[in-house]
Length: 113
Length: 118
Image 1 (cartoon, rainbow over the protein chains, first blue to last red):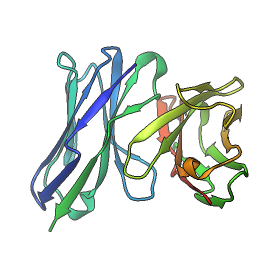
Image 2: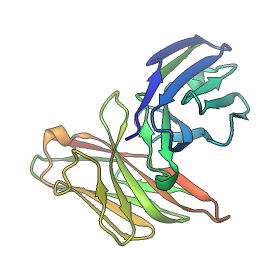
Image 3: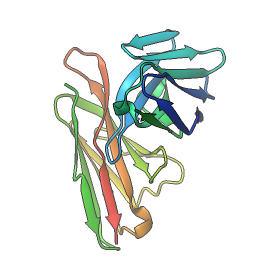
């Protein structure tokens, strides 16, 4: 089955700096890669996603890149703000079971003013 | 659009009792719902996949007789934790997959249910 690895486990950045979180996956059949933000005691919120036919996607301060050959994808947050502090999870899903997600271990991001 | 309501948000029960958690899709039809469990400071682990009108498919290591899943309609799936024990205390989260108003695929998570077993 799919195995998703995520690094780093914690990330501390100064407000205004960029944050980068990296994930690798094992199953070449996976073709959907969402990123979620989870605040304490809440459910995960989708912040951006990318499909395997696209190499990069951007939404304001957030971008995701995908390298299918190397089986890795990354989340980039620019101009970080204190409200970006949360746990971020990457995930992967296969085409024939879309929505059945294998999650990475998560990254605790702390943005200090 | 594509809202999933999960209830209750928090529940405390005594050891040995059963607890039911509901997951509802409010504005779309969820042909499939997924149930995850999340222990403190850990990731979400898939427990089972439920398709409307059929039996749930459980992930390896998840006891189907302990975690009963019912998906009787296109808008409701329930997870019942039977004979709960303290080690079942966790954050249970559902997600629903279906078609939105525009016909596009949607995948939305509920807000989660915190179960504490005393």
